[in-house]
Length: 174
Image (cartoon, rainbow, N blue to C red; front, side, top):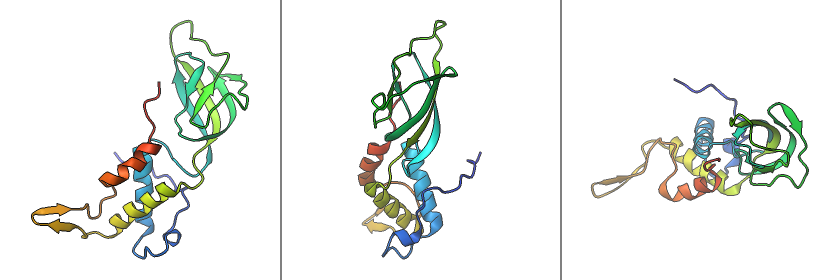
């Protein structure tokens, strides 16, 4: 099964990485796609989006984002609720004062129209450049003795790059 084609909205081109002459647009798109898949959300740029979550009825609701810029509207089970400027946190949590558990025990359906994402996270852009560079240079691997190091043509983070992925990756959402 293939994933649906989604137009690239990241805005990165090879021209954004001066000195990296071997980078191709396909490699950049593949690196961005890999980072977003590993992070479980789009990461950047800031964009308006509808987020849907099932919530157990607690007043604190976690949205699937690491950077919530603004909340435009929220509905709970189809009914609009008011969210003030102090009722959400940048980390993606909402405080819904009127939220209570559903009488039948099922989750509440929360739909939030939000703006979220980072403007231009430098460490992530550096990661994209590194991953795209490796993907653009197939056949480059290092060999020390009988050990071959590198993933030529692969679009995966190396061990030292996982720290950046871990900082932007969504954790379990209650």
